[in-house]
Length: 223
Image (cartoon, rainbow, N blue to C red):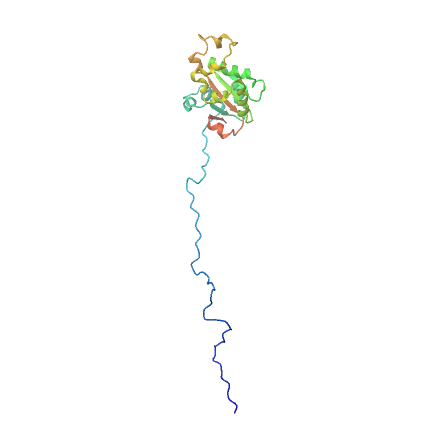
C-alpha cells in the first residue's frame, strides 16, 4: 500500500511570508471615550434685550383741553418738569390754539419759520407770559424746525426744550437794540411774574410721533 499523506490540522492556516506575531509600527485606533460637546451658557437676564418701556400718556377729550393743557389743573404738567406734547389726529387742537392768546408757529409754513418770526415769538411769549405753540402738523418736523431755530441762535430749540433759556435770563440774548422799549427797557421788560407764565407747547396730528420725542415730553392724547 502506498504511504498515507499527513493530514493538516483543522483550523490551522499557514502564515504568510514575512508575517510576525506582532505588527510593527501599526497604529491602533484611539479607544478613549468620544469628547462631549460643550453646551452654550444659558442666557442671563443681562444678555436679553430690554423691552421698550411704555411711554405714559394722558388721554382726554377735547372739552378737557382747557383744564388739562391751558390751566394745568393739579399742576401735573408743571410737576413733570416737561413741556406738553399734544397728539390730536383731528387737528381740532391746532385750530383751537391758533385762536387763543398764544404765539403760534406752523413748522410747515415758511413764513412762520422765518428767523425774525421765531425770535419775536420766543421773546414775546417770555415777555408777556404766554405759550409758544409749535405745530408739526402731520409730519416729523421737529428736526427741521430745530434747524430753523438754529438760524436765530445755535441750539435755540434745545434750550427751549430743556428750559435752559429761562435760566439766568438767557432769553435776553435774543433781544436786539432795535426792538421796542417793552423789550429793551430794563425797568419794565421781562418782569419775573410774566416770565413764569411762559410755556412751550408742541402739537402734532401724527398718531405715533418719534418715541425719543415723546419720552422728553408730557404726552397728552386727544381722543
